[in-house]
Length: 281
Ligand SMILES: C[S@@+](CC[C@H](N)C(=O)[O-])C[C@H]1O[C@@H](n2cnc3c(N)ncnc32)[C@H](O)[C@@H]1O
Image 1: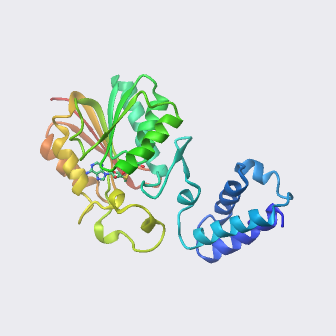
Image 2: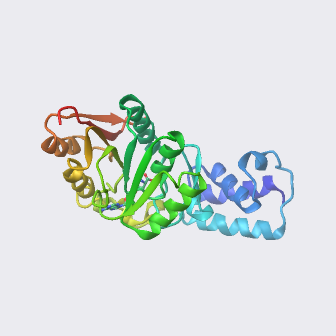
Image 3: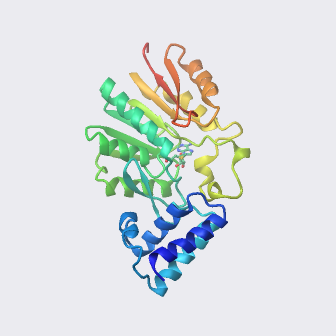
């Protein structure tokens, strides 16, 4: 069997199991089995694969067909142009979170921020991307889970950022030892009743998804503590779920009645982040 035939077979299987982007997913999985990138795979369509490679590949395709995310199968996901290690203890970083990174970079450049806290760092996607893009910046990255922080630490080391990111274990802002210029957080915000028992999301850790009844338990808890952990000209950047913008604005307005608070949309036109800038404190 050659690469082209293997890909065709996998694509039919995945598509038949309602897996979106069956072609790309097949290519990523076969590239992983063969140890080559997608570009090289696509340039070698007529090359033969061994029976063992075929068998390994089809095992992975079967796992993907049942809904297991490709990132957990391969142990990798690209975010902000960087390769991140992932495992089922961490959320798979999402493309829309790259918008937060872009916004954080523009805030840092505009207001000359140099100390950031990434709360709920997961695999370290936000913290590591910021550290790599802005070498002069110091970052605290917190999470509640040791296992999660281990993965984040590996990713920081992989991208040469371990000296500028201090990983801290603890609840929300509690482990922060000093106020910072920018707090950025993609905390769990899925409404508890909307967490599916089946499908790709069911493979991800509930601790990374579950935001309580209205999805705002963690975000609300963070907002409560921000006042004492943000410098007087600082900013807060929160990723939110669809339709949560106004509710988060109301929470923030309670603690910061004079601050500028904006809801920003992603490329699909969905409210995706809330940006608070302290101006009068
Ligand atoms: C939605 S994931 C985001 C991960 C990563 N920041 C990203 O954008 O890909 C939320 C993360 O928050 C962490 N978390 C949940 N509750 C927390 C809490 N009370 N304090 C700190 N981190 C928390 C979870 O362990 C998880 O890693």
